[in-house]
Image 1 (tube, rainbow, N blue to C red):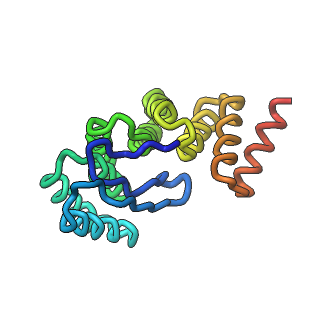
Image 2: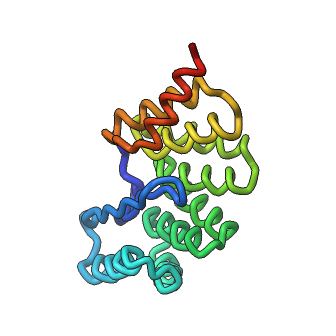
Amino acid sequence: MLKPCISSALFVALLAVQGCSPVHIKPVPAVAGISPEVEETYMQTIQLMQKKQWKQAETALVSFTEQHPQHAGPWLNLGIARMNLGENEAAKSAFRTAIDKNRDNPVAYNKLGILYRHSGRLDKALDMYKRALKVSPDYPDSHWNIGILYDVYLSNTELALQHYIRYQQLTGSDDPKLQGWISTLQKSQT
């Protein structure tokens, strides 16, 4: 079961894999005790993200995190906005802060893993994907990304196949590309 990305915090808004799978935007209701004004302000930033207005979302999220630094969700979303703007070092920093606020944050670990993979830090990427799966063993995006890492970068077809199949089981995906990868890897195992 996916644990919430905010232990003492507001709400998780986005689950996405930059450049690897579709963006899934899932606003979650506010935690008890959050004022309607704060919730409304935050939901406006979510709407900017849904419209892919990344620069405006980043500006709003910077302001929000300054006013409410204790919440993990806004830091996670700031990282996502920065990632989409190509501000990878700033995105890493935001994801690390989200993790500091909530260690049970599979989305932040997964996103950080993607950034490490893109920068060639495969050891760090693998560590982040494993942490995401330790927190949430059924988090599909981490299975997808660790499968890619094992398949394309680490040449471990057995583990890649396991993670692709698990992703497919969790999502019910009938993506022909994914099915082709699974078939190719299964043939290479025989």
